[in-house]
Image 1 (cartoon, rainbow, N blue to C red):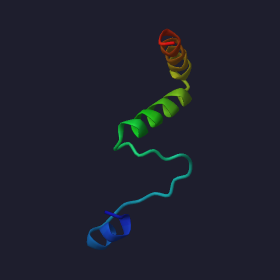
Image 2: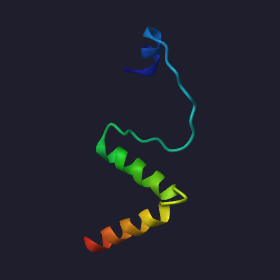
Image 3: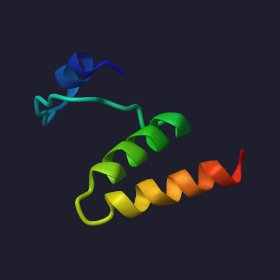
Length: 60
C-alpha cells in the first residue's frame, strides 16, 4: 500500500531522510544495508572489512 493512501486511513509518522535506501524486505537489500552500515561503524567497521576480505579470499 502506498504511503499516501495509507495516511488517508490512519495517522502516519514520517521523517525525511537523505542518503541511500535499501528495501530490507528482500534478503539482498537487507544484506546490502547491513554491510554498508557495518563498514561505517567506527568501532567494528575495520574488523568487518577484514573478515569480509578473508571470506572472499577463502572462496576464490
